[in-house]
Length: 324
Ligand code: AMP
Image (cartoon, rainbow, N blue to C red; front, side, top):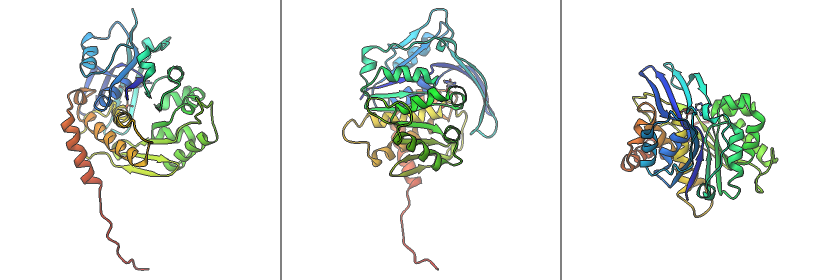
C-alpha cells in the first residue's frame, strides 16, 4: 500500500569524530523515504527553498519516490540543521535549526497523497503533523515521530497529534520526557493508557496509539503494545560514521514493512519482523555520512544482513534444573 510521508526535507551540516560535511541532503522525510521505498511506493510531502538543488530532487526521484507533493517556495530557504556528535554517538548537540520554508508552510496534499492508506508523520512541528493527518481521515495505519524540541515547545499540539495515530516512534529519553515516567516500560505503558483513556481528541473513532516503539540508539529498539514487549539490539557494527537520520531510516523500515502487508491484522509476529527490518535499514544508514549509504543500498544487502541479525539474536532454550 502506498505510503505518504510528511516531514523535513533538509540540508544538514554534521560534525562527528570522523569528519565533517556541509549542507548534505537530509531531513527526516528524506531519510524515511529512502528506506521505505524498498517495501512500497512512497510519496513525500514538504517544502523546499530556491537553494534546493535539482540534483538532490533527482536523487530522490530516481529511487522511485513520488516528489509531486514537494512544494518549491520561490525565494525561500530549505530547512537547515547543524549538529555535532562527540565520542558518544548516542547523544548530539543541535547547533542550529533554521525552519526556513517550513515557517508558514500549509500542506495541501494532492489526491494521490491523500489516498494513501499508510501515513508517516515524520519529525516536524506537530501543528503540521495534525494538518496532514486531517487530510487522510481514512488512513489504515498512521505512525508519528517527534523530538525533544517539540515536547518542550509544542507539547499540547504534540499530544493531540499523538492521539490521532496508531503508532508512536520516539527515542527512549523523549518517551520518558513526554510521559514524565522514569523508565522505558512505564513510559510506554503510560502512553498506551492515555490512548485507552481517550487522552486527546479521538480521530475517526480512534483513541490513540496501540503500538509504541522506543529507539535506543546503538543499544537497539523496543516494541511495546498492550499485550507484549519485544526488543532487538542494534546490528553490531565496528564502524559508525554518522548516526544522523538513523531514527528516520529505522521508521522507514518499520512502516515500509507494515505497508507491504496489506492483508490481515497487525499481528505481533508482523510487528516483530518489521522491527528487524527497521534495525537492518538503520544499521546501513550510520555507516556513512547523511543519506550516502542508504541511497546506494541494494535489496540483496538488506536480505543478507537480515540473515545475520537473525543469527545474532536467536538462542535456544535448554531447561536446566536450577539450584534452590
Ligand atoms: P534523526 O537523526 O533520525 O533524529 O534525524 C535527523 C534528521 O532530522 C536530520 O536530517 C535533520 O535535518 C532533521 N531534523 C533535525 N531537527 C529537526 C526538527 N526540529 N524538525 C524536523 N526535522 C529535524
